Every structure is written in structure tokens, then in C-alpha cells.
Image (cartoon, rainbow, N blue to C red):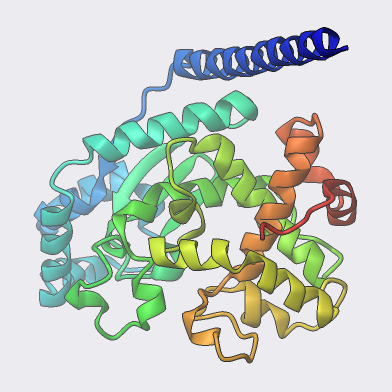
Length: 326
């Protein structure tokens, strides 16, 4: 009996070893296939070309970037912009912070290889760096085959240009989140916003987007994907059970109360439980919980990303058998 038991245990170990080796091999194979995808990505420095241009260069710029010069704006407006002292200062700061974009180019290339591997129909865009007068709601714009990146939105939380902006927004305006923002615009094109507006459906919508980032940005930290600082990430992980209990006890999952968006899903200085620990909590905690549910679901179900993004939230939740980390 004793010998038999030992034999069973050793067989089990062999089986576990085989499974883990197979798992690693598959991961390696995917990584190799992604690395083999050829993408030649170049970022056009419209920000720099515009900064160095004079009125006489305007026709050439308009010819090269017609889509950046809407017809309804007269040339006089662009010339004024070239000579505006605040614009000149903004462009100089961006030029200094982003003297060269080689590292960003490499990161973007890697991100796009991952995206194209899972969704081959997505074409490699023409990437253009520009300044957007700190239009932080549109840091990255994806329009057809154009990817526009407003570099003036990535100068770091403490930059003097952001002194009038709410702190929780300024925290986001950092180069470490640039790649994550690009991933978000692609994910938003793939994942449909739910028709069912209950809280669970909206949580899982964001969970799907964050799970795509897991696959597309394997080197990034969870904080970079969801835009949390290290402290916010630690707080959230430590309080996962409390957050979940609050959602369940207050019957929020199937609530269609639109206030739940500002309270738990939208960027905000903190999540609004209306409890004493509010001040410590980061905003967007509902997104984090949706992410946890999707992650657990994907660990337990053999589905492609394409299949996962179209699954109803309710199905993902029920089949995830999610239990919060204690």
C-alpha cells in the first residue's frame, strides 16, 4: 500500500512536470512566432517638423500631412500657431523630453506584432507624433490607418504644464503609460461596449480590454496596463475581498444605476464606496474587478481572444467561478 501510494505520487509529479514543460513550450512557440512577424514601423515627427518650420514651409507640410490640416482652417491660423510663444514653449519641451523615439518605436513595433498575431486583419498604421495642446482626453487617436500620438500628454505628472490639471489626471500623463494607451485604442475597436448597461456588463467590458493587454503587453506591469501606481496596485490586491463583498452586499452587479460609472469605472481621484477607506482607494476599481473575473475565466476555459471578446458578460462571470483573493 505504502509503495503503491509512493508510485502514484511520483507519477503525479511526472505528469505535473510534463504539463508545465508543455505549457512553457507552447508559450515559447507563441513568443517565437510573434517575434518572427515582420513590421517596419517608423514614427513621423510632425511635432518637430512643425516646430522647425516657418510660414514659407507651410505648403510643403500641408502636402505631406494633408489630414492634419482641416480645410476649414485658413493658413493664417497655422502661421499664428507657429509664432505663438506658448506653442513654441510647448514644442521645445516636447523636443527635449522626446529627443529621439527609438525606444518607443521598438515598443510600438513589439505591441503591433502581438496585436497582428492575434488579429491578423489589423494593418500596421502610419504613426505620427504631434503636439495636441495637452488634449489629454485624446492622447492617442486611431483613425483608419493613422495612429496619432500627442507627445505633450506624456511629460510626467509633475511637469509645470500640468499644474492646473487635477492630480489624478496628471498622474496618467506619463511616458510609462504611452504603450498602454495605444493598446487601449486598438482594444476599444475590437471589444463592443455592452448593450446591457448593468454594472457587471460594464465591469467585464473593461476586463476584456485589460485581458487583451495581458496578451499584447507581456512585459508590462499590471499597474501600467490599468494606469495604477505601485501603491494603488498593492492596495487593490490587498483589498480585493473587501471590494467584492461591498459589490455583492449592496447588490451592485445587476444594477443599472448610471452613478456606478463615476463611482467605480471612470478615472477618478478615488473610488466612492462612501466608507472611511475611500481616500486610499484608486479610481476605476470596477475595471480591476472585471479584469480579475476575465482572467480567472480564461485560466479555466480554452478560448481564443477572438471568442472571448464576443462572449456575454453574464456567461463569462458564471463560468469564471470567480472567488476574490483573500
